Image (spheres, rainbow, N blue to C red):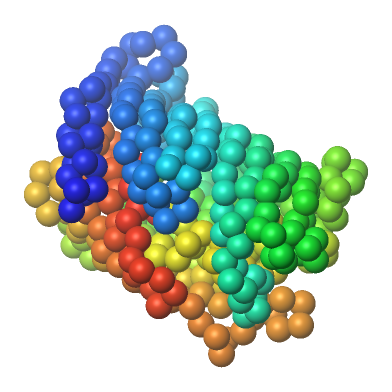
Length: 359
C-alpha cells in the first residue's frame, strides 16, 4: 500500500504541470502538451527505482485538424539494483500521417536473471550487462491505412558479470559474453485506430523481417520475423476490449538476449522479463479497459503464450499464462498513467507503473 500511495502522490503532482496550447496559427506545432514528472517505481526487474521522465505530444501545424498526434519521450532513472536507464523513444506522424517514424533508443546498465532456455529451466543466474539499443522504423503510407517502410534493429550487448558456475559464466550459451546485432529489413504496418494513445476501435499491426548480418556490422547472423497485431473494440462508450497477438521467430545463430521472451511491462505482465525465452513465441493478450469517473479508469487483463525452437516450432502442450488488474489515470490526449498488478504461477505478484497502455 505504501508503494501505491507514493505513486498516487507523484501522479497527482505531475498532473499539475501538464500544459497545452491549441493555437492552430502556430508556425510549426499545435495541440502541444508536455508532462515532466519525478518517477518512483518498483518492478520485479529493478526493485525500487526513481529518476525523472518526460513526454510531449503534438501535431504539426500544417497538418489537417484533427491529425494523429506525435509523441517524444525521455527518461533517466536509477534503481535499487544499481541499474541506470537512459532512453529517448519517439513516434512521429507528419504530412497528414503520410509518413510515420518510430524509434526506441536507449543506453542501459542493467542486471537481469537468466533462468534457462525453453523448458530447460535452471536456478536463477544474476548477470550484469551494458547495452545500447536502437530500433528505428521509417515508413510511407501506400494506401489509406497501410505503411511500407524500412526497419533498423541494432543492439550492442556486453555481459559484464555472471554468476560463478552458471551457464553464462561457463560460456555454453550463445551471447553469454557479448553480441552485436545489426540488421536492415522490410516492415509492413497497418493502422486503422481512431486514436494513438487510447484507441477505442481499429487495428494497429506490424509485420517485419530483419536479417542481422556481418554486412551491417553484426557478429551474429540470424533473421528475426515478427508479427504484432493489436485490435480494439468499443463495447460501450466507456468500455474498450483490447486484444493483442504477437508471433516471433528467429532463424539462425541468435544470441540468448535476442530470443523471443515473455515477461516485462508489455508482454505477459506478471512474469519477470526473460524468465521464459526461446527461438519462437506466440503470445495472446486480452484486456478490458473501463473509464470510471473523470480521469480515473480500470483494467482487467490476461494472457497466454507458447514457446518453441527449430525442433518444436511451438510447444502447445506447455502453455504459460498470467492475469491481473490495474488503475488508469488519464492525462491530455488520454496518455494514461498505468498502475498494474499482475499474477502468474511462476512467482509472486508484481506491480508495474508506467505511462501508456501495454499495447
